[in-house]
Amino acid sequence: MKLATKAIHVGQRPDKETGAVIPPIYQTSTYQQKAPGDLIGPYDYTRAGNPNFTNLEETLASLEDAKFATVFASGLSAITAWILEAGPCHVVVNEDVYGGTYRVLTQVFKKFGVEASFVKGADLKSWEAAITPKTRWFFAETPTNPLLSVVDLKNLSALARSKDIRLIVDSTFATPCLQQPLKMGADLIIHSTTKYIGGHSDLIGGVLITNNPKLKEQYDFFRKAVGLNPAPHDCWLTSRGVKTLAVRMEQHQKNAKAVAKALQGHAAAETVFYPGFGGMVSVRFKKKAQALAFIKGLKLFTLAESLGGVESLVCLPSIMTHASIPEKEREARGVTDSLVRLSVGIEETEDLVDDIRTALKEI
Ligand SMILES: *Cc1c(COP(=O)(O)O)cnc(C)c1O
Image (cartoon, rainbow, N blue to C red; front, side, top):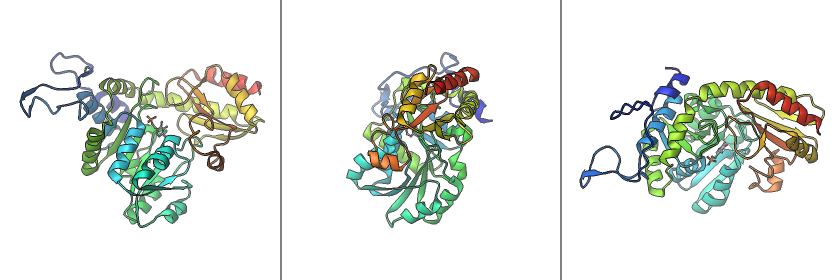
């Protein structure tokens, strides 16, 4: 079965009791037992498990051709479970990661003995140079946010393997449609399902995907022990959203390509960041005032954080998504205050291009 078919059929069998084509929302905290400890199904309490978690996990694992998935309340709670399993150690991370990933590593888990070194993701030598005797994991986000640079996962995973280090890939921007990191040698994938996988900007969720049964068992354990579980309703919504992932990604890509083209070559646009695939485009203007005028001129792109929904969004990362990174460091990483990030939605291409052209005229 190909991805678009799996997204619709795997983990979504009609309900056995009623024949309902769509599995119901199991909006329950607890489950009846026949006798103490004698369960009717595999579930006893929803913090530990729920049929809506299981259905979604089956679907998401299948999209990466993986054996296991564990769903979480958010992308960041998935990252939390990953760190809790890793324990006190050293990790190497590409420097232009999602602001929340940077924040949880440097402001939360640092207190618990997790040291992080941040390196230029595209430069394999800088990953190697950052390794210490305590390094247990490489964390690679690719394409990155908001500069959309790409990490060479095949060579990075080969380097990791040769040093007995594990590799986790934040594949949120690529989705399983455009990149399947486990097949390139990664040990673990994290997606913020809030973004393209859910696809409708109506929920928060995350997932860890692996072929390693020990890791799967540990992630299930930490979800239950710490309370990182999602809500059944959010999992149900994610299961609904992911069915159209493949068609949505096609339109996102078509539109992003057209938007990048409309921005390229405009006198005020210093650099257009577009990796040639996916739905994200960033643009650095010469001045902050131009960036602000461009944002103000857009009618179809809503000013908001987040990305990956059907509707187009625009944001100014320096003040919005990446505000938790100290200014000097942020600027050094290229997230300047004249950088605008666009999450290109699935509206009609021509309407989006017109909107971009009109806004460019305003600056
Ligand atoms: C949004 C995002 C996260 C965090 O996910 P939440 O669901 O918001 O907790 C992590 N990584 C990337 C690349 C993201 O875009």
